[in-house]
Image 1 (tube, rainbow, N blue to C red):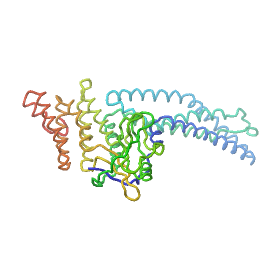
Image 2: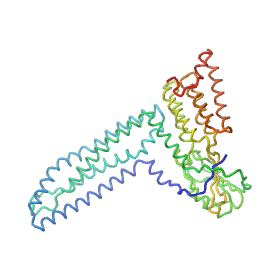
Image 3: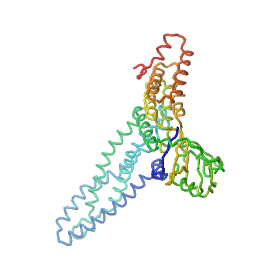
Image 4: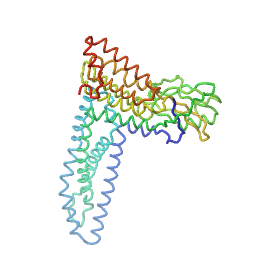
Amino acid sequence: MRLSGRVTRRAPGPVREYLRDTFWFAPAAGLVGAALLAWLTTAADAWLVSALRHEGDLAAVKRLISVADDSRSIVTTVGAAMLTFIGVVFSISLVALQMAGQQFSPRVVRLYVRSRITKCTFSVFLATFLFCLLVQSSYDSDTDPATVGTVPFLSSLCAVLLVMVSLVLFVAYVNSTLRLTRVSHIIDRIARESFRAARAHAFESPGDAPLPEAVGTVAYRGRAGVVRDVNAARLVRVARRYGTVLRLEPRAGDFVVPGTPLLTAHGGTVPPARSLRRAVFVGVERTYREDLGFGLRQLADIALRASSPAIQDPTTAVQAVDRITHVLAALADRPLGAVHHRDRAGAVRLVRNVPDWADLVDLGFAEVRITAVGNPQVTRRLVAALDDLMRLAPAGRRAPLERHHALLARAVERAVPEPAEQDFALRPDRQGIG
């Protein structure tokens, strides 16, 4: 079975994905914003003093000086303490995340790096620090209302406002970080990202029309890495220009090295390599954007680690199996196997491989099934999961599920000699043992 879809989606955004995977852009933007805000508020303060003096309202200028002097201690204290506060908070957070990564999966840290509340908090903290430093430099030693150049009244109010925003964000940040150390929240986040990846694909079957004969291949040229993004619209335009159908050889998530086949041309003319620049993007790790199996890979990793002799946390393994079942149930009746992208005339121009049903079932259950033997809580949950999926999947997709069910039963029979224990370990239970 195959997926089909015209190229109606927006072209992939590798720059956006890069910025989401990095931690420098948001803080840098916050620092630039703080400098700009300090310049604007300082200019506004100078204009306000000039306007009041022009009207002869020196009493109002004196009141502004009094308010600015009262808030000066707040600005000074915040400027001195904010950077130390940032270092302590984020050091503790990184230690907590390192422990979570060791216990659950190293990919947990990626959730932290991509967290919007984390970047927003760090950006506002740094912006507050820089803004307070710039405001301190704008204080005038002259306190005579008739001659003072500027009074940082509005600047001081903005500094106090930034402090209040920082406190609110700090509470939200602590809550978000604590949730990232809880396995149930991590598993839920992974499942939700998996559903977003599934919604990015068009699940329609175009039929099984064969491709034209292959006329050549295009080798990958670039740095080695994991296929993260594919500019399908660009590839469709190139294929239409050269009258060919392109088949992308690696799947999203595959590691490619220079010289390996990247595209195979079927019919027409093989496009030159220069026309395919910036059509396939690679990175150092997999992402959810184009990768249907990445979520299942992470859930299986968590279940494997929880079932290992070093950790022995079957309840966490059961929670991971819950979400594996959830993801597979959502894909049970969807066409899988390949994505066909068409041009405006309706002709297929690009074929991309995606995992088929058997691949996804193996990814979700194969390794977990092997490590679960001897742990009745996990085996009982696996049996219940396989039974539920066999009820939901079409008849043509039950073979992989039946295979895993039979392999699990045989493995338990070999590992557990007592018949009563075998029966207990293979009894379906959605909570494992409860």
